[in-house]
Length: 482
Image (tube, rainbow, N blue to C red; front, side, top):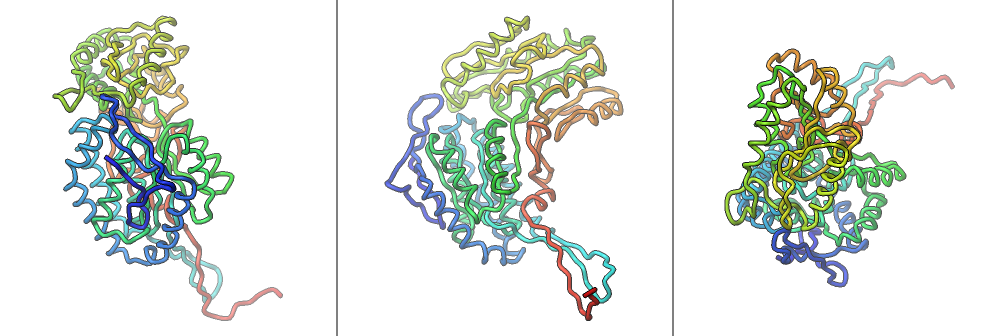
């Protein structure tokens, strides 16, 4: 497919007609030929958003809600279109694409519900005859930068919540999923979003740094939100910091699943299988460390390996499979290097590790220790590691020893004990007797430590995408000291 930039509700070619190509991760054929925006194009998108801001910020909550609700219905009607584009660009199965659309539609509906919850308050004051209050107002143009791995979910939340709060948006699409992200713009356009309220730019990978830098520097951009790697998140935060612009960051993870000595092992295995291998582990919340009490480790690993070894691998367009292709043909090279390093340091490869082009079988490393790269490097592939702990206290210490703090899980039959462990885990979310991979539109989601700061979802986004202001009305003559 061929795509252009989306500016002022129009498909616009990049300056000079420049394009770049996104290849199918399985066939290596051209999946999308996308417009390669220049810095000039990016700034035009911000100008369009800035021009649309006065009218959109003054639009009443009922109208904003109506448009977002309609967009949710339109998005669901385009499920098959999203599935087709995602299959070619990011190797997604129909199930993963359908889940993306389902949750993204929920995000649009949740955002719609927030339009009447953007509230201030009156505050007592010692000044006679004075009304003191706070109000929340849109911040302005929001720059949203979304990744490829859950492209509909993560781009939609980066757009819908700022729009609900009365802001306009420029979305910088992922270089790996340009067609998918542009389809979201088409959905909102079909729902009737006014011109300039949402603009989407695509760019060649080599130009990303210059374009993001120019977008952040633009005076009309007042907030930035980014979902992606911690490495890039640091660059964006540093750049925004120089311009004193707040940033919402949801970054990498190394999510631990703790299996206590009283855990239901079958349930823990079910959660670990799902958390480690859904969308071949290319999820920020993926279960990348399974920390197991040594008292039950042998039995757990036996059950875990049996389940993982049976997971089918292949092209999701050619039949049912659980493990599909990695995002690029050579993504497995880094995973293989992690396996080699771990084995050199004493880890045991208990299943998987077989690579065929963009495919890798479900892989589990046992007896992993903090000295190994795989212990704290995000794998972003169908690979997880088992870390054996000598009791509960060591399990908690190991869980918190990571630089990351996005999601976590704890399994134990004694729920009060498991909850006390969950309360001690340093992560943005933690699930007792549930998987590390969980998300809902109404939940404030985000991380701690190297996994970022700020929250997407629920009422928390109102703090992220509005300006809190203090207003007074002084109705009587005031006394001044001079």
